[in-house]
Image (tube, rainbow, N blue to C red; front, top):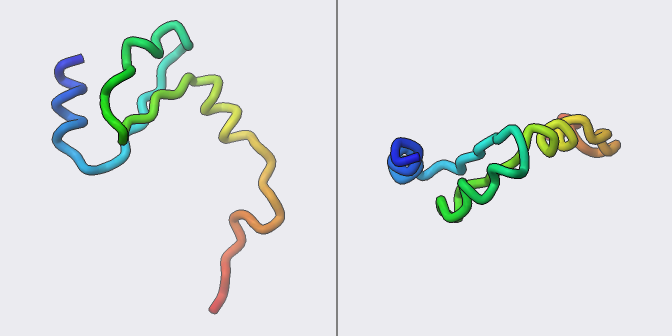
Length: 61
């Protein structure tokens, strides 16, 4: 956990931590505003949501 905290402190990027189940979510709370903690199942749901008609289209200009 200390290694993870150091790595988060050393970057300005958003950090996404993917955990196997909700029982571990409390372990990762309090790591900062830029840290998102998600379960594998919630990532799966997010990635398999249907694409809306206007999403993902290339806009030519």
